[in-house]
Image 1 (tube, rainbow, N blue to C red):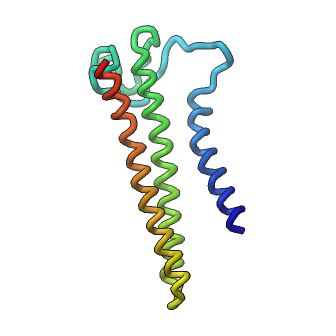
Image 2 (image 1 turned 90 degrees about the vertical axis):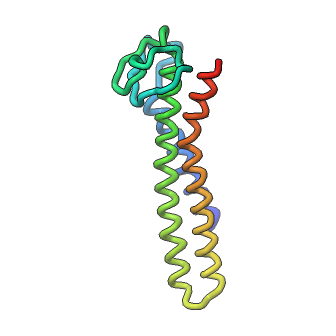
Length: 144
């Protein structure tokens, strides 16, 4: 039962990580887009564009601002990962809390509930790290 649960959670997690790439990045083979539609405002001087060009909702030419399109994609994927991890953390805290509250003095159940909550907190730290990744890429591109 534990293996089935672990495999199903891993499958949902991997599908959640792959889904944004499928939704936002599927192109026919050998087709390179001429422009991209920004979903986020890209700040920083590393994009190779002026500050007024890389704003949310703008259509940017890939030839003039390739880094804007790349950073926007990184922001979009990291947003998806962040929201999926927050959902998983919430579910794990609820399940761990229910184990802990309904343990009725059973130390095994109480320990299992505590472990689930600790794992959820680790997942929360990883989720916040997913929000930092775009800033790291923006820093890397701005120092070229």
